[in-house]
Amino acid sequence: MTHSLAGAALSRAGLNRTTPLATATLVLAANAPDIDAVAAIAGSYTSLAVRRGITHGPLAMVLLPLLVTAGVLLYDRGRRRRKQGDRPPVRPLPTLGLATLGVLTHPALDWMNTYGIRLLAPFSERWFYGDALFIIDPWVWLALAAPLVGVWFVTRRQKLLWSIVAVGATALLLLAPMVPLAARVLWLAGVAGIVALVFRYRRLLVYAPAQAEALARRGARV
Image (cartoon, rainbow, N blue to C red; front, side, top):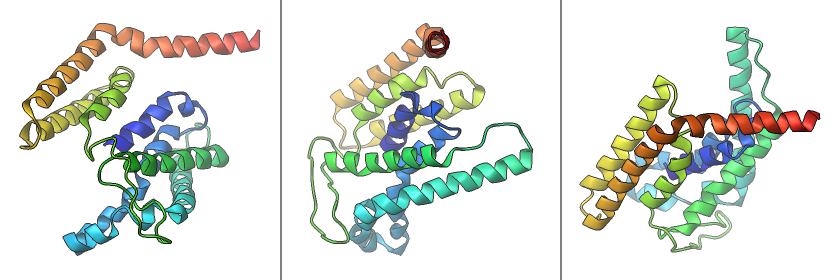
């Protein structure tokens, strides 16, 4: 979930205006290196041997952005052919740039936690550890989700999605036996704070960015 939130946060930082499907591109790319999770089908030993290896190394940092970009372009063309809409097409070069940025955030975040990452795979099997975050860090979730919920809590689908995320993450934190009581209390307080912020300042959170963008465009024309 951390990688998805990181991609979404980059999108809301202004990158969503670079090309259609920018948000989808960033979120997909931010999760792309975890394609090695399919190794779990072969058993836990294979999963441990493969995880955070070649798909997180330098070769993957070159190949994965190309694959994500190709997938987004194919989806865009197929969608436009089906719906025959007048929506602008996805721009290939900006999409590739976003895909590259999204993919690069993945090893950066993985390196920061205690599990580590084989940054040089397949050329080296050495593990690198930042030891700054736990492998599942709820505080990062809260920090990334807080500015996103207010903006993407408008439609019924958005409300349902964020509700599922909140309930699932809360259940994970409350049911995990290794999570101390203080952390559970702080998590509940953080979720309650985000909910209160959304309902108290939702109009400001939703409309202020759009108004600021409109003013900037008006000033540029002048």
